[in-house]
Amino acid sequence: MLAMILSVMVILKKSDNIKEFFSSFSRQEEVERPLKRKSIKRRRSKKVSKVNEIFIPDSYPSINDTRNVLPDNLHYTINNNMRSAKITSKEQLRILRDEYGIETVINLALDSTYGQKCKKKGKKLCEEIWAEELDLYFLYVPLTNKGPTEEKWEIIKDELLHGNALVHCTHGADRTGAVVGRFRLEEMRLVEEDEVYEESLKYGFKAKDFRYPGGKKDPNKYLRQWMLYGEYDE
Image (tube, rainbow, N blue to C red):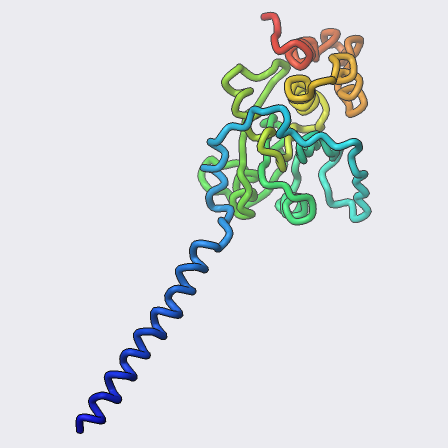
């Protein structure tokens, strides 16, 4: 009888050791498991402002949209960010996330959302709903023909500093061009205003002599002043 009791005690002791052995692995796995994207919104609160943290490639890879599924006017820019025209479907965002590493979507234009179709959730934009479903961080800062306020610019810039962001408006030319140009001027050491302006024209930014039929000349006057000099006149 005593031998049986001793045997049971040994088994229980081993059982405790086994439990402790496996539970230690469980705790270790919990500590070492990579953080998921659920904390993206909190991660954005940490500002990055050092110029030497900006990734500036020697050249940008070309984008060949052979499937004709990507947004128009899609191009790389500094710090692993991208720029484009409007988003037309959830599938576009999924491809940008999975194949191009996009984590954040910055929408600069209400008119870019016209025509988007989805199952509405309150007053949320379709693009915002798609981003949430794909676990992307969505930032909506609509602009007109002028640059953002200083407060809004800091919010936009914070996302661009973190990188892997897509910034877009409707055509990916004027508002997007101004934001990307301003970011380059503030964060790159050797870039000049003329270079930034020439690049913006390359992607569709309207030049000084542009005039809409029946409209005023130079509709991008204030956007250009903000892009190149960080200010505009009322």
